Image: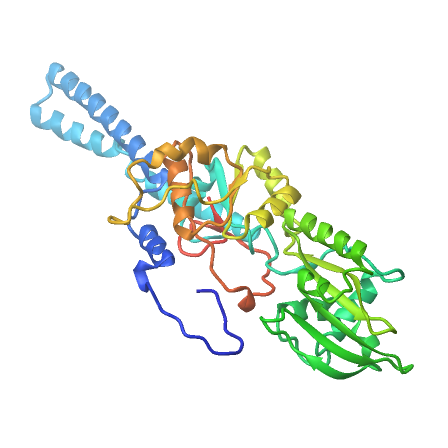
Length: 414
């Protein structure tokens, strides 16, 4: 799920379908029960206390009437009327009306309230477990300003032009990298550049290559692709220092979860020269950090739970100030393989989950169990799953609305 075949042929074997898959088991868990909300429980407690007090006071009134000489029938009739009038049967109607007015005010701020009782649940929330892609971030790769350059005189602008030359810039982009480059490069300046030969991307070579002719007659080759593949094109003796520096930069970028695209061109002598690295990352939304800071000011702890790589999650957490204690799914609990329910030793993981800033490389069932551990530990947490859309189908999502109380496909988990 979430993968798209753009060309070629492949044979595959389906091991699980429907409720037996990771997504299916999680969906079954979320639909397993209809738990009462905090508001329902609170109203029930209030009703029980008030009914008990009413019955006690009505009993006292009934005894007083009998001792005053009233007839049993008259005393009983008065007591029954008093009991019916004292029981707060309209409390739920009043609360529903109040919440409806509150949901109307929330709607003015862009919040969609699909279940009224969720307003009170959100008000009592103490931990917010949020997905990363499309929720904390834009779900759209963006070129970063950091651009390691290895050829004198080159800039990010020129490297983007070379990367565009190594693609079919006059045609619609064929993949995510071409989309990224075409959106940032100055394509208008390439109108007089001719492309005489082009080698498209292939998984075996992991790069594209083109031969271009500039208006002044200069002909050279350009290529873009994985850094370690492009480095193999260089003369390892003449460019030993460039190779070493590039490998160091790629490693440093990888430790921060930043992806890189190498761009190279041939010199007048026909030798490949590394021009630089284009770095790109799925950046946080402009208002994400302020929202997280505001949530913390309100006493709500924010945890990131994502299926992305650990290094990418750590870099996103660093930018948002969410802490660097991001772990993978190795120490997280798993569903019981037989009952498909939370394991009996689920609470043994409570301290580990509570102390961690977030989790990466997790499956949907892990997200459910993380929320379940926190709920059983005494935190007010609601389990929500974010929508699962392949990046190719949702390259640019609008800012997420706050969906209060929607259990099937909201953007946040609370």
